[in-house]
Image (tube, rainbow, N blue to C red):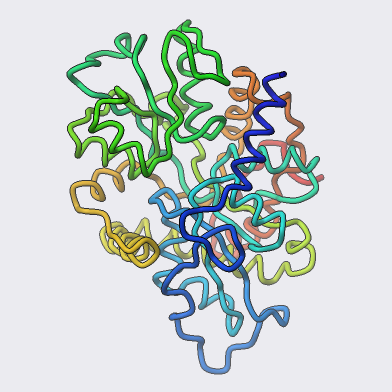
Length: 367
């Protein structure tokens, strides 16, 4: 079976798998404190919508959405239209929810966005903004791995076959001249695809020697005695690379541009508040994580994790294109046609109104 075909089948299966806590839609868990933000007196519905359905992951790299929910930024900009939130554990599940109309707008990583766009022949989603950069590390057992060269021959976890961190690790391995079969994960390094929720226990038990993972999983491993061997940001120009984008259903963008603009305005305001109030923002994100999952992150995990993430409205489009080429090189993706994946028109309108410079789509925008 060709590698690309196998990869697509894995993605389809992953998208169909139910999450541990299912919402009525069947894709993600409902955020537990949704709709608690007050609607301003006299506020009107945007585009006549009762609600806008927003998806995000329960991790710190999606803190723009977490803070936007907790602090009421989305509700403020949507007027009398209610934001409705769903929390996801995996990119394929969120893309499936977007495809089905179970969500309208979502915070998601670059690889699922690329896969969702290419699998639909560019007909379903658009990336309409950026959210975060960084927050990905290679954490290892210091007793077994003392240098980058020591990674060879060891068992290293990534979250999922073909996900953003999996592609990054496979590319890093290839650049060191080591060989790994992308599908099986076997080779000079054993790549063990492990859910982020399971990875800390696997690390503590010794069944893996390290992991290339996003925050807060990386800091959870450090709390288990791990050592940060490499911060992925060090591999990128200016130490910037996209880890979280904002995507929208193309049909929703066409039918309800005012609602999309309101969500983007809320996102820009949330990022501005996060960067101006890092400690308060960290607390707000953790509060929302606790509301969504029932458990807050301890300070020993939260604090170092937060420091490694940069929140930005810029989608860092050039780095998304680079990540796509890494997936091609690994044999996990056919040469993708990404022309038109971005539509930054509304984001740049919002930024201009706030006196901020426009951001670039790196030539991959709607013509």
